[in-house]
Length: 517
Image (tube, rainbow, N blue to C red; front, side, top):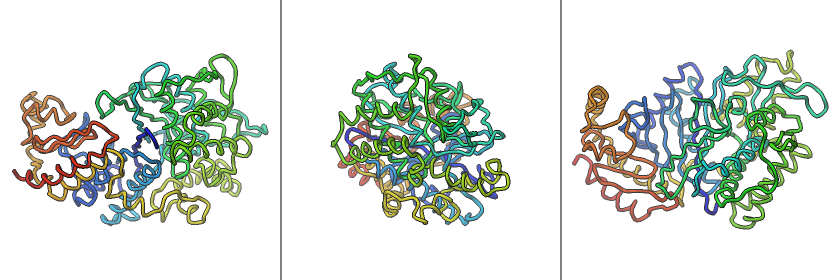
């Protein structure tokens, strides 16, 4: 997509006969111990992390532990199909390690956003923009879009009254179009846990619709739009539409567009939850001016301007604009015709069919299992994959493309350089330069005594920390989104839109000379 660059982060839930934390650690150790998919990072990169908490992958992405979950960050992608392939590559790497460690049947990974016990975990989206996402115009411009995007981007969730989330109380569900009681179903998995409209934090202080943290990993020229309200989709169609529409709206706001139509919401959080609780409702929300507007019509405001500016620009944009318009029209006339395209619609109809035959109807406890089965990434137990094999869900990319992305980076961004260099470092066994006992001991000394010659902080922010402390003997290399440093040999990757082809080739060729030196 022209002028666009995006990536996602997925926190995987683990289930089975082993503790989720044990599964996460064993898979992480298997990924990097085997050197099949990436290279371990020696330094802790966040508060509370241990050395070797994760690493970068040959595809340019990153796999690491976050609060006991395995989290996978895709490489930066320039096309929507590359992003879909990159997301699938993360799933496939986990499944490959389950087979290799002989854990099949003992451990499963689930790609969703709630455990149905009141806990939520994230699926984050990142978009490279040139203006700040913290300005009032940007925030006010994007909130109505994010609140209403769930009507085609929601993953759907069975939500009986007994499993209300701890983070926030759900409002009473409104009636449906025909006046019948609404089913216990949410369009969005994240909406029930959201309590504030914007925040600089992800969890503490309330879960926001829009996260204002701006760590660009690309210097001052670019900013990063960090969206945490999205659901983890299984449908490739829904994923492509979700990311594509968001990328176009981000570009609109980046260019300074403001809507001439009044779409500012009276209460974004209340509107988010109201829409989510109306799988068969009207999706009408209150605006700041006191009037009401449907979620579909709010989306059309963005669609109209994106079409006016970008129609015919590139293949991705053409696809997004065409499908965006088609989906909104179908949602308005007969939303359940989108069975097989949108996750929430597909899941809702599966649950509805099951409930119609169950002794307790919509209160049948087995509906939770059916909901979770939709999100299993193992094709042998996944309801989603079963529906796909039955021809009810059509894939967008070929499986071979996702398989290739397990060990190959996408083109068109700095992820290509990062992936190639990580592979060269792994082949040269750069991790043999790590003295794990020394790292653990010296980091402990630093934490206790503030040894500034080793490190100033309880984690390593970037290569500058190591350089300043003259600590390459302790941390032999730092791999980051914006730079790679190996024993004082620094390669800056400041422009996320550049492949750094010649620089990556030269750096990779010299890596073997540095190992053990």
